[in-house]
Length: 447
Image 1 (cartoon, one colour):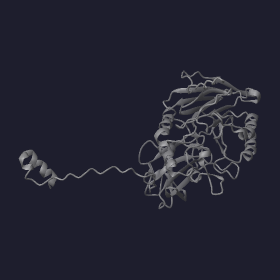
Image 2 (tube, helix red, strand yellow; image 1 turned 60 degrees about the vertical axis):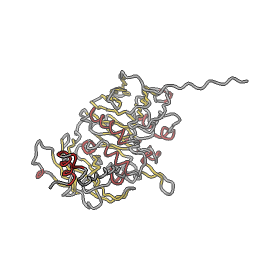
Image 3 (tube, rainbow, N blue to C red; image 1 turned 60 degrees about the horizontal axis):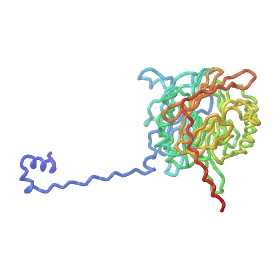
């Protein structure tokens, strides 16, 4: 059937003079674009989203996964098995029922599902999907840790916090391009800006996209993961535990924020620097006393040595640094100060060399002023960075790179029996990125 508008156009082309005698053609105005609301953008559906891998047990033989759906999905399921080279594998996959819980955010209700895949073979690639039996995610792959000391990389990120979708996403994706075989990503707190804003958590999951479902995350909470309750007490985000399945082997009242896990030859320890500082010190001392892994990496949010002007975390330094010194912890990964600073190893008493390397870094676009101090070997302002850390036998190789992938900082630690680590400094070509020094205003002569 020819529409009236097409008919009118045909008449006009064949006989322009007929336009005056033909019926008037009415053109409807274009509908204006409607910007979707936060609720519409981040509304859960029956299809899984916010899929994220973590660990709450041995990374060589288990893998935890968590995801979100709309509230009408009562039960979550996981199908998984050894990754195969072609199609037709579904019938050979195992099935696992998830633990499901209802959740109410500021944008509305949702349902979170979590499960632990067990009985896995070390150093093996697996495939899995999550859903409810009808609505499934895509098939996704991951790799288990080895049960022996083998070389591997991991990525460390400071605060994402602000403009996560628009500006942090390019950095975390560049990190993946630089280290596509990284076994996990460490996030040193302030993943988002407002602890209980579902839209911000939605952006944090969307920025890396499918990466969180392939590469596990190791997360520690920052101050922006905390919000005051009606009694004025700081409480960790209601999103934290529903969306991350983490170890519960820290002090009892800090579940899934104070914990440790062992990945091959490395013990990774998360301290919650927002509360319970002294009880965690006792726990840390006891843990390190019985640690046998050759490498120890500790992550928490508030730095032992602050890099931003006017900041100092004296209580944390007093409680935790003597323990870090006593057991010669290798690397401390921190955030909070929205600058970059890396120590020179001279952080012992009176500036003595103690071998522990302290790093403060930032991955998001929010920036502060740096306050240069003697402990800093390398520093930066107004620079988004990611760090790739490689463990290879008795060597730890550290590189920091900018959002464009440019090498900014580099060092190597080498284990020496009975002695502190040898520190070998790299020589990046990029000069330090520091703000111009603004001279103080000239004094006005006295009259």
